[in-house]
Length: 64
Image 1 (tube, rainbow, N blue to C red):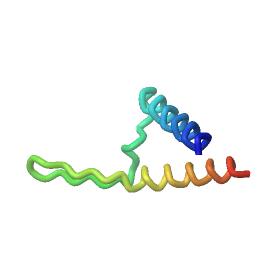
Image 2: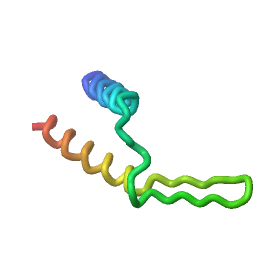
Image 3: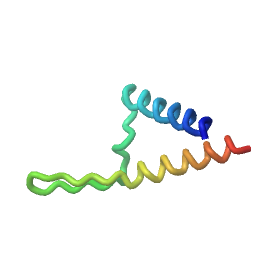
């Protein structure tokens, strides 16, 4: 369990570094943005799918 938490922390820190470097994580084509009046609804659909695929591949490689 500890190893998984360390890996999760490293992944989160890596994503943070990529965002600070200017990589547009979270603003991919296909993300849903609805602006009406004073409110904005944002649902990162494609971003969630991409992160899910990357994490699935990464964890499957680490289990071997």
